[in-house]
Amino acid sequence: MSGQEYDRLKAIIDDNLMDFLPCIDIKSSFLREAMEYSLTAGGKRIRPILLLMACKLAGGNEIAALPYAIACEYVHTYSLIHDDLPSMDNDDLRRGKPTNHKIYGEGMAILAGDGLLNTAFEMMYKDMMLYFDNDKMLKQRIRAAHAIAKGAGVRGMIAGQVADLEGANKQCAKEYLDYIHLNKTGALITAAIMAGAYLGDADDDLMCDLGIYSENLGLAFQIRDDILDVVGTEETIGKKTGVDEKLCKITYPAIYGIDESIKIFNDYIDKARDIMDKYDEKAKGLVYILNLLKERVA
Amino acid sequence: MSGQEYDRLKAIIDDNLMDFLPCIDIKSSFLREAMEYSLTAGGKRIRPILLLMACKLAGGNEIAALPYAIACEYVHTYSLIHDDLPSMDNDDLRRGKPTNHKIYGEGMAILAGDGLLNTAFEMMYKDMMLYFDNDKMLKQRIRAAHAIAKGAGVRGMIAGQVADLEGANKQCAKEYLDYIHLNKTGALITAAIMAGAYLGDADDDLMCDLGIYSENLGLAFQIRDDILDVVGTEETIGKKTGVDEKLCKITYPAIYGIDESIKIFNDYIDKARDIMDKYDEKAKGLVYILNLLKERVA
Image (cartoon, rainbow over the protein chains, first blue to last red):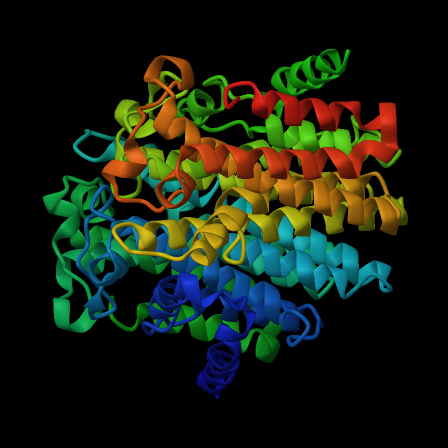
């Protein structure tokens, strides 16, 4: 039942994902192709789906929220393209396919990432101009876009990526590891959920509960990635495994061991589920996301 | 006299340039340093100054326009950092100093660029939230931000950069060259001027005249860069020269020769000056920018 809701929203995202890419002149033809390549490489669309679910839980209209949901997926996709570059994680494989720079070259991959980030913001400004006659919805949109920009930015995702890059080969404390996790993965997940809440005009109580849900989900998300990098196989997770250890990256399994990491992961998932309890059926989609995360870990 | 106006606005930009960078956690310390390094490497601040001049010519308040002016400089600086990367133009020197990746490494340079682009949009959303009680100014700001995003984006600056990258080592027609110029350099210059016009609430006539001014200025700007790459020295222009020829890039001097290129450059400058004639003293700053461009070309 709740899986149906996820599938329905994923289909909406997939069906509309390309419609917000601007037409690009034939002279820059590979740019469009490179952006499309990574957008259609089989993502689970977790961030945009979370945005739509949070918006609906707050009582908002999911179709009106679509540009913001898709902007989150563009931001997420840009971050993957840049993360995979030789000067970052140097990954050849992502979701079972060659990474963007392996197909299009490093220069084009950097520009395709830049293009996706820029388009995310451009499309949100453009959407705002459609709401010049609706003061309340216009302000919701500006707040949502600001949340996404902040989550993606130098106090969010980019800060986490920098700490991750600087932390490689270092002996780091648990606090530093949580900083990376909260920012690198958590910030954009939280931003997507908060943006959905703004767009649905959530009240303070729901805003607070969604904040707790998203923080725990974000931490669980990154710990899961750390765990799968150790226990997963290239076939099951679609990218090289054992990468973190090779790059001497600090991870949960490296600090706590696998068993304790799984326990911590489950604690975060439980906390996120507990806070959604009171919303019962209305939060079934958000709870389903937690189950989805657990599938390959527990 | 008009030089004084330029100097005054440049001082405003320089004095406020860092104030819009968010506080960044100590754990991502090099990110802030890398962004600051390129922001303070001695730019002429042409784009933000053009924005403020256009805003003032339209009757607007230059201080209220400052976040948008500085956002343009952040976007411009990010584009320089990414352009200089080994997988793009592979430049070691910019404005007489080592390029960002020579100091901080490629990974950090990519993230510093990403951070500046993201911050430009984040600060404009944040600024908009300060104008929730002023409907007219709020809409001006959204239009201005959209113009900047579009100029910076995949139908603007990024499209030009992609065409430039794809055009290297190719035999290309004049039309292709103008496409690169109009987008790679012209689009953000035009965007800055149009954003200033929106922020100043320019009428249709002024909007149109500023459009003509900016298109001609943008083309002159890039031709000047092409010419200086041939006739300039590393000492006078602060970066390696002869780069275009080495990379087999298509340029005005390569297609037209130096003398004809200078003639075309002067024609564009004259057209931009002519359209500003009717504004007399009020456009003196915009005319001064044209003279500034001519200084090293002849």
